Image (tube, rainbow, N blue to C red; front, side, top):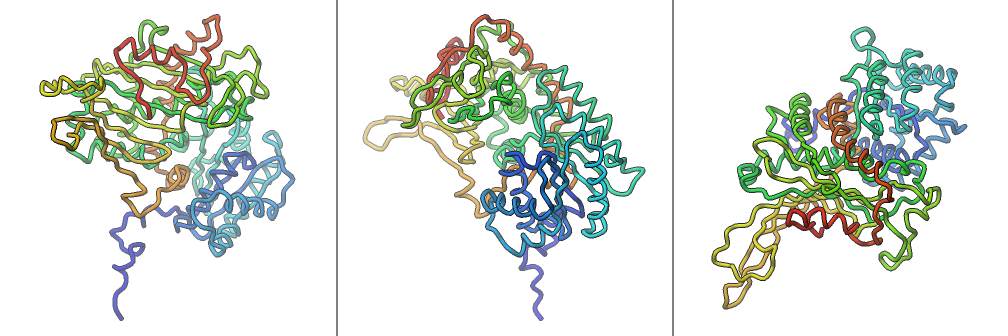
Length: 513
């Protein structure tokens, strides 16, 4: 009989995917009826199962106030998977996975519900073979973290691996506090119950393929790393633009704003990955150490008024549709000073980046949905091409697109076809969808699998969170001292005029994604 083992990559021991299959375990979702669980988390679990990355006895427990039975929860989860999963629905996979679905009804302060949760996990240990391994995913408001952690501790669910068989881990969704003081308080609460190595703070941007590819692009290619420094780079722009408004998120967004919601976590993580030195390895401690060095080296501008901008979108027309202004959104105070757009300039005080400004911007109701990192290089002398009319000609750039079209673009000058020596900037594009037959997994697929495997490189630890708040807090305090509301900007534009002035003071302009 011919040996077919080598022809099947899933059975080839050299295939590293074999080492990425989770072991026996149960995943408990607090806040399972919320949008995140319905649209992302439960579908991600199914996609992992459909890809063969979960064990046959894997279990999912939903915890919420709904009076659902196990069957009710399973039926709801089936609809969520059918509407939001990335991979095609497979009845066989679903039957195997849903056999481990359970639901516990109750509130966070209800002792009886946590007794029922403990009994449910014991039952799953026997019937599904979870071996007492549990992940508790807190997809809940931060003000509920303390109560849930205390309940888990009181009922013997947050266990020390050295004293009990099986492991317990906790996953925390952002925001990690609303300033430095609250972040430290939150960390103390969580780590009083779970060991630091068992706490996974999720920033879903770090699970995106292109964010991880930034490390490969830099450190696996001799082409880029030699010029990735102040000798060649003029400046860096990191953008997260959304073309939607706040919608029904008044309860969360008012008082938070673009800087706390996006810059403090997503964009500062992208800055750290862009500017970090090469780690010794991709071990979690090594990777985190290099990111922390970058964040610790960030220097705030002396004059925050000239190095920051903020705005609120107004009502008007966007994409042929009439949209509501921020202050007219349901649930908002007409005098709200919460910004929907924020831009800041930061400098990194290291030899590699001395003199290179980093511009970060995030906003809603902008021209299009896009997240990108643009490394803009210094102009070549261009002694032969002085008569080129385009003022930005000759400024090469490497642009890493995080979403929606994951990939990278290189901008460089090329001769225009014809009899004259006319040069124009062109782009060379790499897209994941064109270069690989494999489809990119959703960020939550990668991150949930990493939690189940106990692999923490993509999860920021509390030092990173605190360093990020040290950067953002001064801007927030300055903006809070201003007597006026944020500057208005039209929907579909690229933000307030003050954002353009922020770069114009340095003789630069924002990229148009």
